[in-house]
Image 1: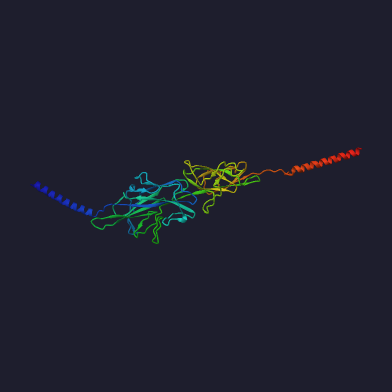
Image 2 (image 1 turned 90 degrees about the vertical axis):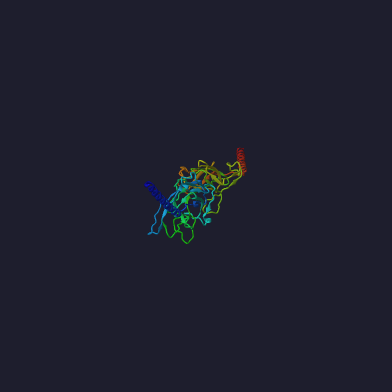
Amino acid sequence: MKKTKILAAFTSAALITSVFGAISLSANAATSYTAANGSTTSFDKYLVMDEGANVPNVSFEYTIAAGTAQTFSAADKTIAVYAGPEPEKIAFSGTGISDVEPTDRKFEIAFAAGDSTTLTADMDSSDYVKNLDDFEKYAKKTAQLDFSAVSFDEPGIYRYIITETQGTAQGITYDADNTRVLDVYVEDVTTDAAFPELKVSSYILHANADTISIDQTTYGSDGQVITGGTDKKSQGFTNEYATHDLTFSKAVSGNQASKDKYFAFKLNIANAAAGTVYTVSYADDGNAATADGSGDVSISANPNNATTVIASDVIQPATLTADADGKVNQIFYLQHGQKIAIRGLADGTTYTITDGKEDYTAAYVTTDDRDVTVEKLDVAANSDGISKDVVVDFTNTRDGILPTGVILAAAGPAILAAVVLGGMIILIVKNRKREAEEE
C-alpha cells in the first residue's frame, strides 16, 4: 500500500513536471523565430586601362569568410555585429564568374579579350570607379552572391569579409585595399506575436570593418559616408591594367634612296600573356590619348620598280594576338615617312624590331632606355620588358659616288669627233708647210 502511494505521488509529480514543461516549451515556441534565408546581392569588379589597350585574359580570385563580431556599446552608440553564418553555403554566379568548388568559399572573376569597355566620357552614372582618369576606359563584371541556403535565426547585422587574392598577372596593379565588408541586415517583421518573423532586409558593401552607428549611417563602397541622400551602387574592387604603345617609323636619305620603295619590318613580341590582343594603327584616329600610325593597310603586288619585297597583294593586320607561348611574329611594310603603332603592350612585354634595310645603310634612334642592341644598325630590341610608350625611328641611307671632271652627255660623241677632226687638220697643215720648206 505504501509503495502504491509512493508510485502515485511520483506519477503525479512527473505529470505536473511534464505539464509545466509543455507550457514552458509552448512559451519558448511562441517566442522562437523561424530562421530566415537570404536572397541575392552583388558587387562590381572594374578593370581600368588606357583607351588604346584591349581587355586582357586575366582572372581574379576571391574568398568570402565570416567577419569578426562586435559588441553593442551604449557609450559609443554602436549596434552589435555578428559573425556571418555559413559562408560555405553562399553561391556565386555571373558572366565570367566561376565557382569550381561550391563549398570552399572561393570564386573567380575572369575578364577576356573582346569584353566590352566603357570610356570615361561615357561612364555609367551608377558606376563608381576608383582611379579612373581622363583618356582611360574600364571593363566591368558583376558578381552575384546567393544567400538562399544561409539561415539567420535572430535580428541583427551579420558580417562577412570578401578578400581578393593578391596575384601576379602581367600588367595588373591590384587593389591596394584587398578586402570589402559585406553586412547583411536581418529585421524583425513580426505582425502576429504568436508567430515571430524575420526578414533579410538589405545588404551593405563597404570598405572597412568600422562599427555600425545607431543612426543607421550608410557607408559608400569606398568607406565614405554617403551624403546628399543619393545612394551609389557598390563599387566592389578596382584593378588597373598598365600598358604601353610601341611605334616604329621609316625614313630614307641619300641621292640613290627611293622614297616610294617599301621596306619589310619584322616584329617579334614575347613574354606576353597568351591571347593578348594588340590593336595596330595605320592612321590618325583623332584621339589624343592613343598612339597613331600613318602607313598603308592595302598594298598591291610589285607596287613600283624599287620594291622587291612585295610579290603579291598585302593586307596589313588590324590586330595581333599573342599565341599560347605569349609570342607574336609579324611582317609589316613601310615607305619613307610612314609609321606603325602597336597599342597595348603590358608591362614586362619584350619586343624586337628588325629593319629590312636591303642594300641601304641602316640606323635608328629610340626613346626606350631599355633597348639592349649594342650597335644601332637595323635591330631594336628590349629584352627587359617595356615600361613606357616607345618610339623607334629607323633611317636607311643610300648614296652613289659620281665621277668628278667633265661629264659627257648625249652630245659627247659629236664633240669628240670635232676635236679629232681639228687635230687632223692641224696635222695636215703642218705636213704641207714642212714639204714646201724642203722644196
